[in-house]
Length: 427
Image (cartoon, rainbow, N blue to C red; front, side, top):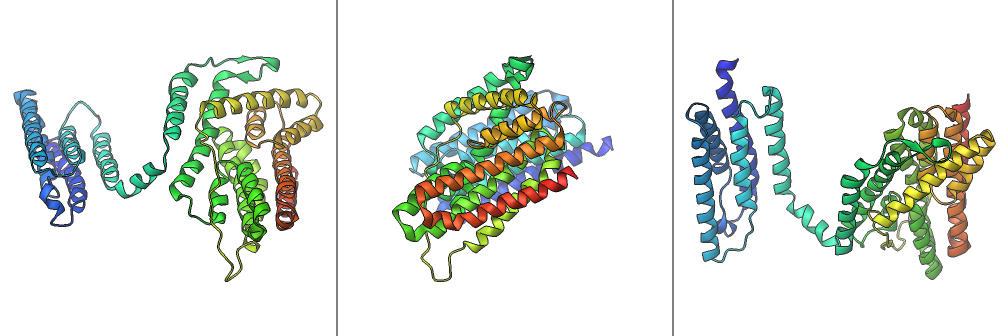
């Protein structure tokens, strides 16, 4: 096999360059754009092959061969870019960087000691080529997304990344505080987990843009904050009673997605609890989604679009607020557990008035030995039921009966189905 290794590695370099080159070829389909076209399906494989051969020669002649080859490529790119400036062509550095990637992938494919064994090197070279190709072809997707990102979003994200990368890994990993149930590193990771899931929903709402149906708004907005969706839809239903039905659809969808979100978050932290929790959470989500079918706009009805003003979940203040809430809930849950099941249930009902994430993660932690599994599942269900009923009360108070009458049956179905599923957990 070693005798054929250079041939296989050169083929690997050629494949990586060809993959990038095909994408570059498609990036300039018209004759007008080819005036500043730098290279495509033939040039990139040749660059990768040349770098591979240089790396192969450097095994015997030393690294000077690879250095000369790389310098030659840089000279070619500098000349090409200078010519583009002279002709006042409008393009950035993407094509030049793509050539550098093709060159380095070709060299990596023929390297002997950088990535071992050979199978891992093949995966790394082809995987990097695929990622580079996806990035090169993602301009139609990324540009609209970037237009939706505000400077405030970017600054908040950078601050949060500093906390995630520099602060949380350095937090002490030891219990402290009342009952010894607090752990700064655990609290930090829980904070990052919940914020990350919320950010996925927030990014989806920004990508979709403001001109979308209220149903889609509710479905995606539920990943960020079902409470925010409820407040906004209640306000709109109060101002424009004709939107009560589509607003109710958005609220029901947002409230249903919360249970799927909780199941995913718990599964990451405690798969055993997630397995026991699956039937109630899926049942409640399913009941809400089925109820939403009854709230679909009638044929010929006026469509309703709009944007829910969701705040970015990626901010230091929101992250620390959740960290504080989680710490309070887990201490309260532990204290309440000394009163038996009733104490845990009361703590869950109290926490559910504001949020489901904190009590769900608290039960995921305590159910590892301090709280019985069925009790933990019941606590999460009670928090979800309370959270749902609170949103129903908010809708009635802010949106009026016109909105609440659409929500009543759906919310009762969510609570009832979850309660029936809970029976199976205790059997």
